[in-house]
Length: 355
Image (tube, rainbow, N blue to C red; front, side, top):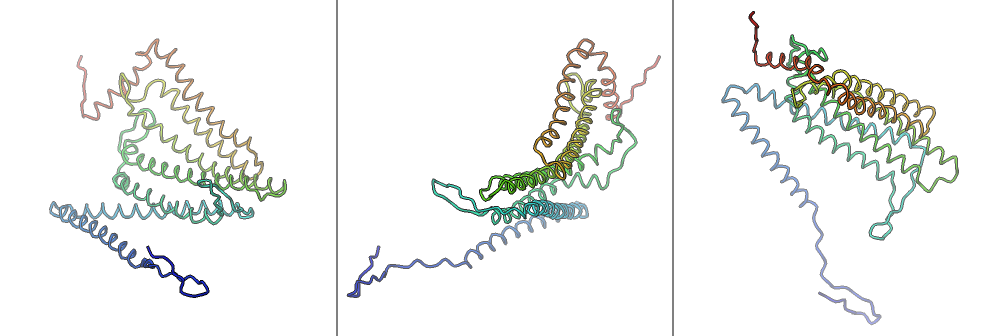
């Protein structure tokens, strides 16, 4: 290791040590280009081999339809996810535009670190939007079979005895509805979390010099969170309605399908929970634009929660213990017959009694 030498009588120090060479940026760009090139080449080779294999079997058109559908689903849901999330974050940013988010100081390893929330949250919103777009785009790409069946399915002639829905609804339509509802539910949760973070930063900043500024920050925070909560509750109500249909093929100890308790108490209660969620969404919107109080938001959330506990937990448990179990065969006989009838139809078995 070299030492600095004094060459002047005045004692001026001149460092003649080795200088580290500067890293050239073009090396990193070249490495990134090589990695991307290898990835693109491998994917292209995989696509070419798959196209040759399907073509040798006479299904070249099927492969290219599948390929185009995957690309279209990825592109559509990537763009929609980015637009919805970034648009939601932009609305939240505009709601807090009149409130200056001051610099904050946090301690990392007992060392103070200053940062500006406004400068940090905006690029973070873009990063989250793009990452979520990639995740949901790839997820919907893997669901291409459901979309292909939805585009080319037929309703069918048979209808189930519980919901009176055609068979094609369960085979072709319901999977797509479930994918859409799950996608929208996750997006609403992300926007709701973003609104909550902005609200927390607004009401906890130290720059609020007067009670009026604090009241303004609280009202803006409640309005933003209540609006995001209303959207989340509406989508949750839709997903809850869709969650009723899988009970048709739910397995039980005796048979498969809807039971007496589910048909007469649980499934109707899920409808009422969805109504409670919609009512809570309306109350949240009223709270966002007029009242702006925490208590009203708590009441809005408590309504569907209470309906859920009473209608889907307490009442079914009571009916199962004191009504069904004393006469289980008599209560469940119609639903067992449904199971036997539809099992015969599925296997094409028709039994005729000869007297």
